[in-house]
Image (tube, rainbow, N blue to C red; front, side, top):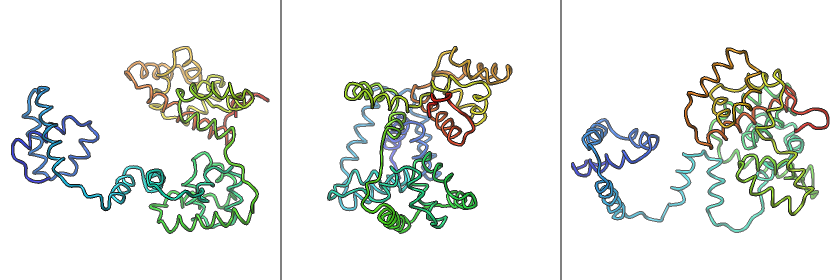
Length: 335
């Protein structure tokens, strides 16, 4: 920030006040102590801010911004840098591939691997170094990565987990080597035989992640086109309501793996009668305490409630996968 005149400092202070707390904090963290003092003093001195004063500050800011020349050269590098800082190098690369217009190409070996069944991935990485497997696992969906890890030799699993935990930034050369390895292994193992990717289970996972609005929009259309397929997808969908059938002992095993704040957020989205299945798995004292915390939590956005419920579903899926809990009975298991 360059030296500001009084009107400029006042406008800057007003613009900061218009930002949300997180963005404002990020901006203020980049200022020197002198700049912070100047800006902070102006923020305190603004007093009651009239609507026309806000409009004037925004207009002045827009005019100052319009006078700056922003060359196009290096723009892609700038966008990639910002994306990488925000979401990490792997996700940023995926976003940039959608943005940058390139010649049409087929999916890379790594992109194919992300859609393969765990047992197929296991064949691709058999006898590979722990570091190579670790780099691959962080590219996969956590649920798939967990199944791949569980299928590896037990004596190798601790070393691979240690490598994942200490991996740090992944060099582009490491990803290139992984791509070449997967491409070679896919060719060696399967030749030209088509690999099974996608399917009903993958569709259910996508719909679960997309939220209830997408589910209500998509499934009725599928039902009209293909009733048999609709029933298959419906049977694979894992909803928060499926947890309501759990016995107290099974529910207790699940709740021991769930943070109390996460549980409070999730239960805010269901009615009191539905909460009873969770309370029955606790002691009377713990249940009463949880009820009080739910009442005092205040209003929550539906998106926050849904996010909490999805995270609990992920915990439940993990416990089901390793046999800690069972959902359903006999031939009617949900998963």
